[in-house]
Length: 90
Image (cartoon, rainbow, N blue to C red):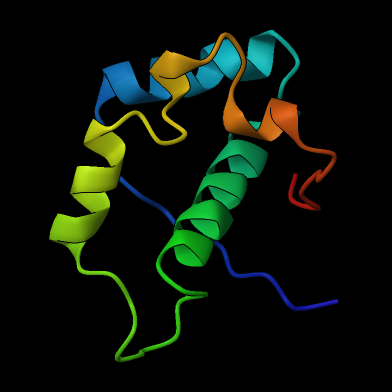
């Protein structure tokens, strides 16, 4: 198991409220789990976080999102609720 670091971030209140709504509905056990899952998914989307010549640019990724690719507003459940993966963060 990898060690964990304590990371603090200042986020807009509305964004935290949306995260909390998924926690309250039971999709995640905590804000930390939601954020860790979101970071893992984003890193996978960017190619595992590895610097690569084949990594899509932010502009290309934005075009994918415009087409409705895995956006929470296009689903009645958050992306993690559609998978069996549960983060180990608390």
